[in-house]
Length: 476
Image 1 (spheres, rainbow, N blue to C red):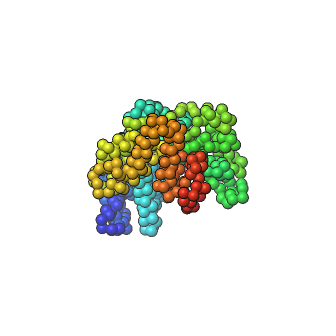
Image 2: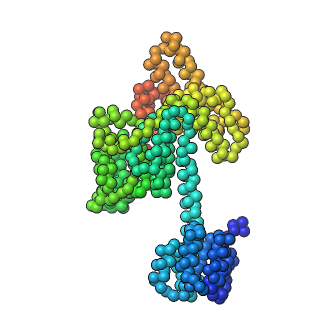
């Protein structure tokens, strides 16, 4: 233990002086110790010093150690108590554990066992405290006030989230890619009674059809060629918590049918399994597709659509939230300043106007990327200027030219839109070294959609002006 790390403090409550002396010799100098000969003194020291751990004798003068245990647990449940006794009564041990004792030791002590039990209990306490702190940080991160926006569309979203967060109702979150659907799903989860239970997110479009069923429901060992061990599915992992199914519109008809059964019966059977597994899972689904159209085309089950669309939340694209752009930009910039502990950094008026004019095809995801770049380019400056936003500045100049040409009749609207789209895609490809996976993420669309738009605009690999895309380090 380093000199800068304070010692853990252990409170010894035992009426036998020789026992207290023995314990003190065993525990010091690794721990600081406090000693009490009776319950009254022990409770007083507990309240005054809030020790890290208590060693409590079951038999004390004038009182029962189990009654003292109840008092200590009522004062502070976070402080573990290990019971000590001279008798090996199973009933006493069981009663102590039921009342919240962390462990149980019989006299005379085995010194090695005593140290192991104390170390294990203190380590468990530290882990529990760390988990509690991390959980509090996560809850704070996804609190309602962290959803930035004063536009009417976002105010409506906030009101709905507050109304439905603490219910078990299934929700459907819709909107373009990059609008923050997963952020809303997390806000719903961490502001509900399930906040201390798992939040599991699964992108349905990111997995091939051959793996999606195993990912959702799990499989048993030997159920297929590569099933070398049992795998727990996302539904089982999310039990008593929330399962976020992103891009649910990409599920195949077969998987849609199996998902519908889980929503109806609240149970499923893993691949190769024989027994149904009961689950209590809240489903939050999301899509950037028009499910109404998919239902009409027979590509999405109507019965499943009604099951997941109990309550619908539509997230408007950033281009329809002009008043929110400055708020979001300042939020992302302040976040980066705080993370790097840099001196205060602000936007100039011209920079904010430039950001507000930009159409943000990649929505909030694209904005966060742009602000990250501006933060880097503005090193040593007190303000972010338009020059620190080269991609946005270039697009603004280009869009102004296209607008003028269209309004002057020199270019058709269709041609102007295609040119603008081409400009944005080329810029995204250049900024990601022509890695289509990264460019698609920057634009907030799938790689398949990007490839389709590239082919439509003549930006495919056959275009000799484009460098070949390097192979990604991991498979999509």
